[in-house]
Image (cartoon, rainbow, N blue to C red; front, top):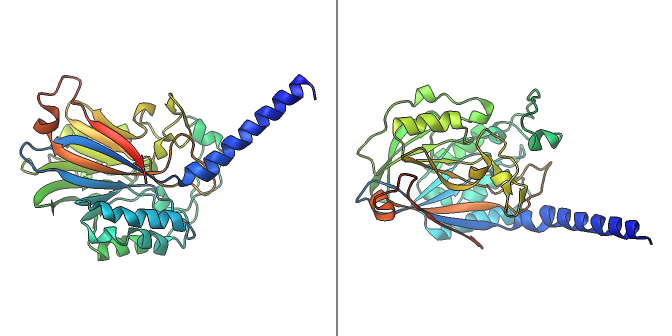
Length: 317
C-alpha cells in the first residue's frame, strides 16, 4: 500500500472512530453540571434549582429515564423544565416515568417546538448553516396536552404566558414564562411589566434563548432567565466550543451561566437529548444542571462593572 493509501485508511479509521464515539458513548454520557449563581435578593437563603431541558425522549430510552429519575436524590428545592421533552408520539409515558420522582418537588415548565411537533429528517447543512433560509415544515402533532396534564396533575406550574409567585423553600419566587420563541409563539406583551420587587428571586423561563426575548426580561428587571434549545451546540470543537446555537444567541453562551446586561444572569442548558435523526454529540455530553442560587451580596460583593464571578463545575454521574 502506498503512502496515500495508508493516509486515506488512517483518516477513514479516525473518522469512523469519531462517529462511533459521538453516536455511542458521548450521547449517553449523562452529566450533572453544577454552578453557583448570585441572583437572590440580599439576605435570602440559598435555593437549589434543578434545570432539565431537551429530553427529546423516545419510548425505549431506558437509560435516560433512569438517570433523570435519579436526579431526585439531589433534593432540589425547585425543578425548572425548559421544554422539548418529546421526540415520539408515544413518548409521554416515558417522560412522565422519568420525571416521576421529581414531580413531587415544586416545579415549573414551558414547552418547546418538539413538544408540539415531532422531529423530521432534515439536511444537516440547515443546522450547521442556520443563516440558510428555508421554509419550516413541521412534523406530526405530538400529544403535548397529555404531557401538560400529567405535569399539572402532580403540581407543576405551566408558565406559558403566565406571571406567578410561588413559595420555594419558604421564600417567594416571582416567575414568568414564554411559549417557544423558536416557533415565534412568544407573546412577551402578555407578561410585560416589572416583577414583584419583594420576591427573593425574579425568574424568567423560555425554551429558546433568543436575544429579542432576553432583552425585555432584562429591561423589566428580572434577575435570572433559564432556557434550553441550543443542545450546547451539540457538535463542539475542543478549546473552541459550539459551532452553532440554532438560534440568534452567540456561540459563547451556548451552554452554562453568563451575564445578560448589567443586572440579569442567564443559564442555558445543553440538554439531555438529540433528534432521533441526528443522534450524535461531540465534546458536549448530555446534561442536567444543579444551580445553587445565592444572594447577590454574598457571592458578588461589590460587583465589578463587568459583572460578578460565578463558580461552575461539571461531574459525570
